[in-house]
Image (cartoon, rainbow, N blue to C red; front, side):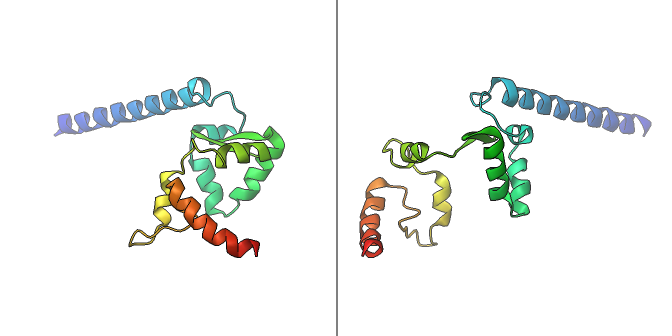
Amino acid sequence: MSSFVDIILVTAKNGALLLVTYCLVLWGYRLFLHPLSKYPGPLLAKLSDAYAGYFVLRQKLHLQTSKSHMKYGTVLRHGPDRLIFNTTSALQDIYLNDRVAKSFVYDLTRQANGTVNVFNAIDKDVHRRKRRLVGRAITE
């Protein structure tokens, strides 16, 4: 029986060591070798999306993002693979660019029957058609 317990303990120690090693290598990559590593931002945000998740749960992500922009500038790394821009030129370059497609996240806001609206239409032609209809009502 003692040898079985020893095997379990050794396996648990090796698993813990493997997990710690994995985390250290991943965080080292995100801090020093990742393509976004040159952009400024909070250290914890560079390591994990849990940083933003914490502020989302407290319903203060917008305030924290604003503080971070004041501290780090107009381009902010706010996650391991996320940049946030705070300029009008970036807004035009990102959202008025035909080469940039909406994220798959917009699919999550569709109705159960697959109906799309002006906000969650990923296809550019569908979005333009719906935008024209809504735009008329807004400008009048």
